[in-house]
Amino acid sequence: MKSEVKGYTAAPIPDPAAVGLIGVLLGGPSAEREISLKSGRAVSRALREAGYRVVEIGEKEEIEAGIRFQRPAAAFISLHGRYGEDGEVQRLLEEMDIPYTGSGIEASRRAMDKVESRRIFAAAGLSVPPGRVYGPDLVPGSPPFPFPVVVKPAREGSSIGLSLVRGPEEFAPAVKRAREHDREILVEEYIPGRELTAGILDDRPLPLVEIKPGNPFFDFEAKYVRGRSEFVVPAPLPPAQYRQAQELGLAAHRVLGCFSYSRADIIIAASGRPFLLEVNTIPGFTATSLLPQAAAAAGIDFPELCRRLLADALTRGNYRSKETAKEAPD
Image 1 (spheres, rainbow, N blue to C red):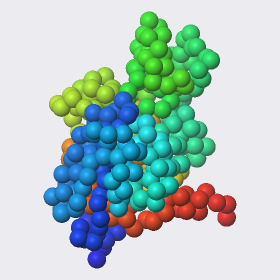
Image 2: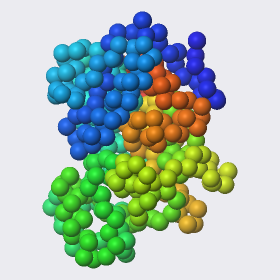
Image 3: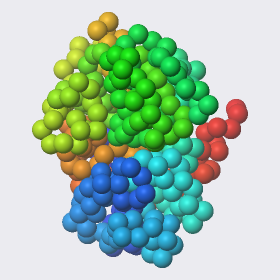
């Protein structure tokens, strides 16, 4: 029997007795390790309470070694940042023929790379802030846009290495900080406005969440320090603007080739125009994280959300063949 909650139809929830060991991948080697541990532990707790056999992989051992030793029947990926969101662990799981949650190899890689994803978004006609890429051999003396500007590493998550630069004296330190995380950096025009996140579940839009950060923008501290930000769901927007933001998030999900779920970060400028910032293929995953909040507003509580993503992983089959079919010419 399919699970249906407020119009969202998912794959049948698997009987715990019929499923083998579930490996929750958490921790890992990225700069987002501590956030990943919180996400993974929350997922593990939810799945265990639902009766599944769960092993956590990555807190005390190297991820690949843990997967090869445990040989889980399926993997629930709670790894944020490099190795978890860039397609590397997905490639390993496919080589081992282990079903896993979320997007496949290429979609994960594209979403993690802010430079490539921007190019894909722009080519598809999706609005992104004006920006310029600086490779390892280019040292920007000044930004290509008036202050303030945003400086970020090309491949990092959770706003790690990101800076909002208000004046010339802050620019060089911001470039240095971003280059500590990636040799390639992105400098974007700062778009002030209302910050939204558009969650996708079962390849359909969830209710929008508006973020009201306590800091000047939604940086690492604003994201993860309790009480630093306020979240409003559903976001109080005019109906046409609300639909436009949801459609932008869904279009970004689709153009990258994402599967099952993702979360897009969007700014609504003073003009009312939405700008797409990035797509997260493995966003934060505790009961109070943004995508679970959006799912809760659709009537899907955290344990149900975890079970649905696991069900999706077990029913999708071979991710590699799906991506090949998606990219093959008509």
